[in-house]
Image 1 (cartoon, helix red, strand yellow):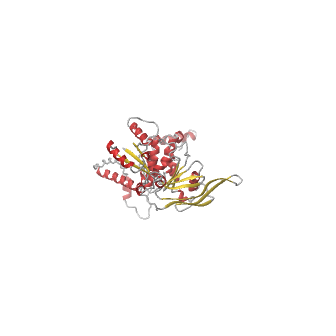
Image 2: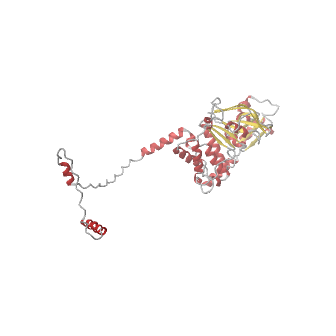
Image 3: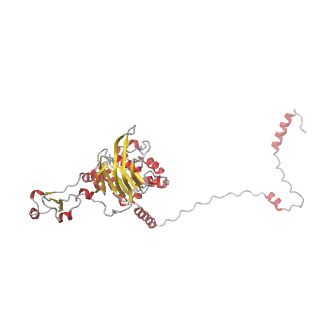
Length: 425
């Protein structure tokens, strides 16, 4: 496959053809076209300002300075900027962990400190703060109980999330024994246990291997397709470029650039044409036509290359067929409850059809009933009850059973000893 790049000379005006063909680079996916630009506003920030002060109340650092942006439903929104530019402070303000000095923040139409707002948010901080003596299953059980999930729902989501993040085989190891990458995986699972409508991820791929990075990006895209809103803060620009619809670039607490990736990355004075491998005569004819339009030094021909991530994933996928590992493995599909109701209903329907297709099994034979012994019948007592009793007379009490002769002899012997050997009579 050949790649031809053209560059218009600075003196030549950009023609109509260049305007029509201008687009994102051919080797990166664009945003999902189905996402509406005028959807429901999930996050609204207007005039946001936060100034950190010292002990005496004197301004020390203006972390966020008059920031405005909105994030809509189903959008993946990126926060970019160098260290100390205000990204993490913005995230903490959105979560209600910090209060702004000036400006307005609304999340789902409410202040970020509202309890109902927090129930709909999932947050993965830059560092995973987890209980080191709990294992993976206990960690998800604990966070699920905080959202008052039913026990059966907690167990279902727990199993699906551990399978998704590739920790099912080490679910009984304590979190304190995990590597940083494995802690990020369980941290991501706890951020999704409540099926949030807004997911805020701060450096989600930090410490992850390339397989984990790819799975995180696939998960973000799956959440966006379901209508979830994702705010992503990351220094890995390639990851942001793969998944984000729009980004803001901070510097000095201010937004220096904002827009969709297509708007920000398009170079209007260049074209890229990708074709299959051409024969030498055909390539010469193409070059001859191109040289009549632009100077020869502005035309470049090269073979396109895949990125390092794609190569790495291919090598690991081949190795998985023959090798074993004691570390984290590639996760499974996105958890069913995160994929939405459509997948869940279809899977449930498939299970019902499978049960209906199975041959009917005969019911197991009932165990024989144990024989209950009948109590003996007192014939004499029964006869007395059946005989009529004369009026005015009370029924005679039943006669006392005669005492055995041996017991009477023993009683007389004891009484004789008490009386000094005299006969009791």
